Image 1: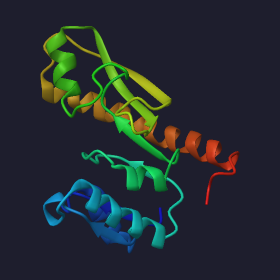
Image 2: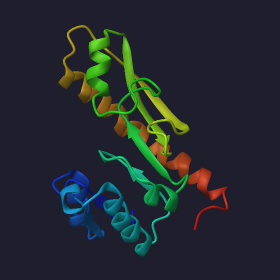
Image 3: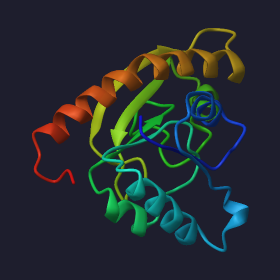
Image 4: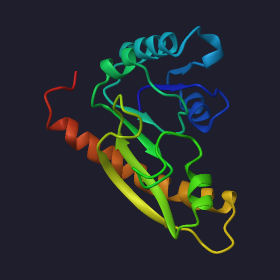
Length: 167
């Protein structure tokens, strides 16, 4: 890990960066006139620090083209559902519970301009249990995310190692 950027300075990733001396950019959307302006700042920060792959973990904003273009096919995201189910929003766990189905899960995927529609790297199913609340189901989905994110990162590293597009 060479740099961390966050839109929520109080998040665990920011605390980790501070504790380990990793360069940190705090990019709250309210500090910028637009999402594109925020992404230009984040792009510059990451490029200055030699970032080759971006991992969106807990990042709750949609990237704009200046950022997507700079890191094309080098951004992964963790999403709290079995995509393509419940893509495109931050309420996937609530949707899964409201639907009344038997399962949901977590997905690590490549970020593209089409929201939550990039190639899937890894998924893990999570059962929806009788009596589940949003909180209990969200906790089990988070546990699945913690398990599959490292695997998704390794798969993406392998993909990039075989590609000439890494700068």
